[in-house]
Length: 307
Image 1 (cartoon, rainbow, N blue to C red):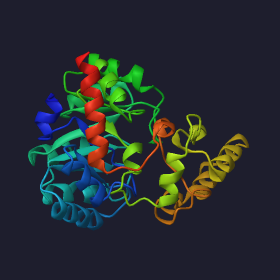
Image 2: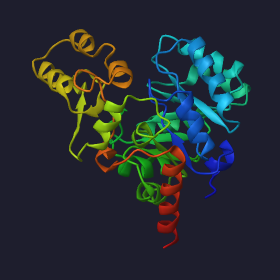
Image 3: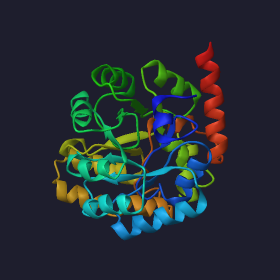
Image 4: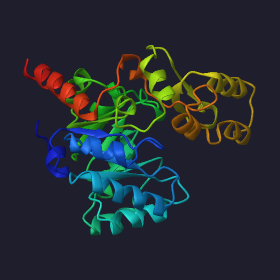
């Protein structure tokens, strides 16, 4: 399935793996890229040197293209922005902010820049500043979210910009891919399903929590201070939402979640940890290799789009 995105990125399938903090490391990125998609290393809050090491490890595992997701709120964002240039990375996606300050550096190095956006206004601004495509991410997704759903955001962004649009949020099978293409997307970004892939280094407790999740099992915390995050319900989300209702300060709420994503991903603490996952979790029922996931999703999408 060839689109402007597959041609631009030199990939076989129009599937990009989400740059999930603590999850998107070299094993997962390399596996997705080797299977014909675009794997991403998630910069998260990691120092530049850590990201550099991850890039080099991924290069040892695959000769296919892969990218880096730069989290713009990270205190190390400036370092990571330089590392991707020095390591010859060809694609950068950005999250949690506006990448304008790095655009000149990246574009002069021939890097394709694909910001994640949650509104039409930001999509238009990113096109104006030279973005090669945008990821229009709906609020069904796991982690940091906006307000609009994928169903409403993607077609509005598509109508507002001339660069390719990549759909994200609530996509976990071929039906989701086909629907995204109908809305005007030329590729999709998938996160939650890849969390349970065999190549994912996420703790088995975390994977099983996603596999056992039902359709109504996600909760959104942080709306009271303007940083909404979607994850699976547990003891921590219940406590967080209770504290929000009580009007607790941003600092108190931050303290509650300090290190909680790492605890869930690495140590398997699925009660006190942050188990980020999208609303699609209720549809994910088994662990597979990235290749099995991508082949299955593409076969289903292509069959639907031919009808």
